[in-house]
Amino acid sequence: MAVVPYSLTKPVRDAITVARFRLHHQSRQRTWFVTASATGFFLVAPLVLLGQTIVGENGERLGPFQELSGYANYTGFLAVPLVFAFLTNSAYSWIGQAIRQEQTNGTLERTMISMRFPASLVLGGALAHLFFLGLYIAIGIASISLIVDLQLDINWGTALLAALAHLYAVYGFAFILSSLFLWIRDAFIVQQTISYVAIPLLAGAGFPITIYPGWLQAIAKAIPFTWAFQLERQAFLQHAGFGDMAFGLGVITAISTGMWILAFLLFRMTLRRARGTGVLGMY
Image 1 (tube, rainbow, N blue to C red):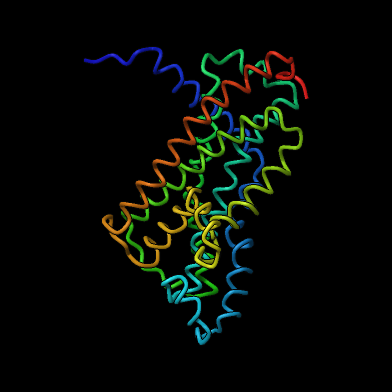
Image 2: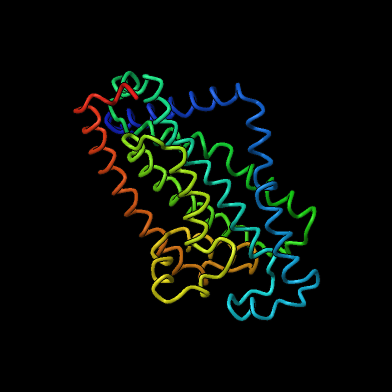
């Protein structure tokens, strides 16, 4: 019987401990669970209804959109990626801002001392976030379906792959933010600007990126979330198979892996800097 080295089990145990603590702490804020459950509806539904108004209730003004995107289902094209975008954005708060909050409260240094592998603090936050995220995405899509016809045609196998690829990118980017937030003073406003403005805008969460000039399309394609939104639309709206999505899955996996590597290096560097300057345990 093979024995798993202690050096491998310790980071996993630390991550699970952090995840349990985060879930226990969040369970005491019951109104937060209600709010988070409704986020997918209240953030996305007004945009979907506005979009439906623009193209017409019966899609009589869909021609230009279909030419640009290749989709006839504008409502689904808009709603599916926006639900994923708004709800996965909570990962940046759970992971990045949580570390900054501990630093502000003066508990981060004590937490780090008790952990042999500091990166487990980030991985544990990702595990805790993942625990509830699938349920909330389902609630978001289901609740919007009550007021508009999303015309979903889901391939559940590739939909799961698209969701996992999106989460892989989200947690890698959240890890990067957690490193930056060790020295960015106003972490909240930076995170909100990036997650609610910059990413949806550059990645084309609510519109086809083909409306951008060529140079901006090139930038958009370097962002993993552009590919995530495309994969989710294919899987949820077109019943796309693995063969249709293989290239996109490969691209997003490669970019996200690069983000994870950068995140580990950046976290080690900023943590060393924070310890050296004495700001790890104080605001």
